[in-house]
Length: 496
Image (cartoon, rainbow, N blue to C red; front, side, top):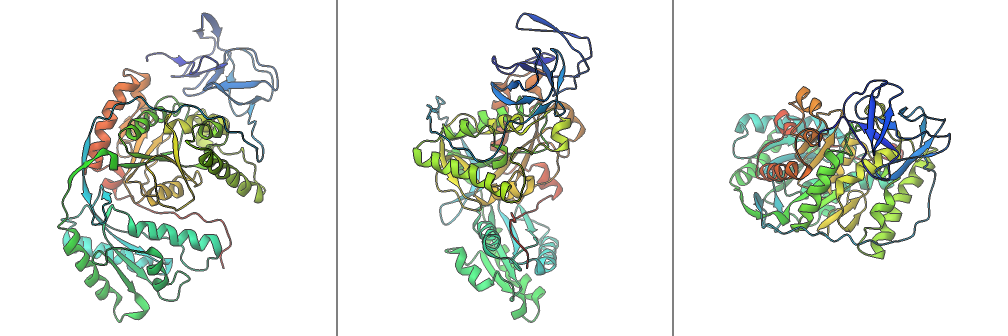
């Protein structure tokens, strides 16, 4: 693809500027010449016809809202003259489509860590996990001390993961915290975990230990600081025991069918639905065809594209679960007096995304075209392979933490504006445009902007497959190199 503008779908009545276009520039699309009425920034939409007030604007083949006023052919369509069509809860009807994939299994492998319970990790790290925010400082100090003592040799990283919760929480919030922390303790990317508790918190260490279920007691240790004389000495003793075991682990060849990836976007722009998100969709389909797993979340960013996902559900039961996934999140918005259609951030709008439908139709392309095989509540762990939908908000760190906690080995994160953060698994940044990749080489790991410049989607996907396998086999991405690793837990209720 090498053009200054793009009409994405034959049914569209807008096109997208691939580079900055000037007022009075002549654009030829579908045999018609259009004279631009104003400057059109890269990533933004311009009208292919005259729009009356209230007419549907169509992009990706679907309506993305309606015009608030008349717009001339060649005019700039943005958040100032376009409004969402979204409203409240909806009734849905299941219209299943054939989502079979015609992609060969290439029997590819990566080098991972096979754990005693049969699960596979792509990292061999030691984590210090606080049960409550009161011991964040102790957890951080212990991780820093073990790194200094061992120089990090023999393991991929030694990290503490402070958070604000574990006490003064009720009901669902309390359960969310317990589940996310449980999921971390059981994650196969951890070669060993020290759980640090205070002793008087809501998330009682003894009860939390029972909540985790079965685990390898040689690799997962607990310390309650109110019950020990010197928490630093005791913590270091336990960490040294964990390190002595984890540091001996070695990578082995593992089928690609064992790989689980999370699909996420943030700081999106008008190129997200043209380059990086479709690239992830192509990769997701490829991975599913190899027997692997991909997980799509950000439920509010499915609004406006949800029926596409619903009709790809393998069974009527999965369809009903997806309807609940969508309407439960809409009800959550409405219960707080918030509209369901207000989502694009200032950065999204500056990048060319005008409505939630515009965002959703680009966002959901990350999961390709395969069947939906599973639907997960927030903080639940994966049970089936293939494409899964996960309940979590659009917030980048909360959603990425949720993807990791479902069991994903890495998060594939597309961005048009750029972001440096990472969650507790490798968080690979894929830029939607080459300018961002050039400006922020310390953030961006892979550039999908070449898809509108000098490389086909298929060629880029082949390079991307090779890169993902290298990362799964140990090559570090930028958030790991920079030490940017954090967690965030979804909070919906009161704090005592």
